Image (cartoon, rainbow, N blue to C red):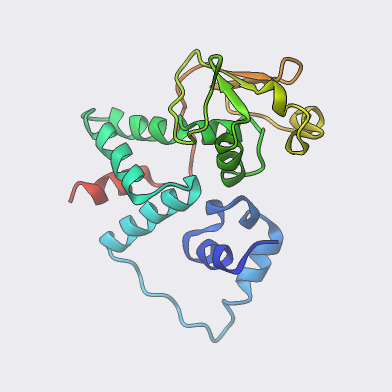
Length: 201
């Protein structure tokens, strides 16, 4: 069940912000607030649109304002068309996001907790920092002492119905995953250009 704060955020920023908002039930519930007598919202200014997109990214990835600003700064060092790609790479290369993208956690928030609790090994080192940046060639394993935890119950069955992005792979027999390449930007819910423009003001 989605909490009231998340419900409000989902209505304001879009269903893509939280996994639990991406359901027909949420769409039907949010539609109740848009009846015949509902006042049409004002058109957003350019600044308002950019601010909205910035908030989408913050809530989607569960990051702080400072973290987002740092990712933008790193990406801005690359001039031209590569800036957006670099920005996306910074967001997607977070360990908590990779755990989520591999299908090992039901949400980024859950993945963040799992990483913080020390359930994962990266290149033979236990990492407890959700923002840890993974790179191509890195190997991510479920820690031996964590494999029998309840959070990993029926993992093999769950992964049979899950397709991870092409830049990631996970072997459920070995309980380890690989970073095959840099993240490819296929996200249509987020306007990364608008966020870069917001910070360039």
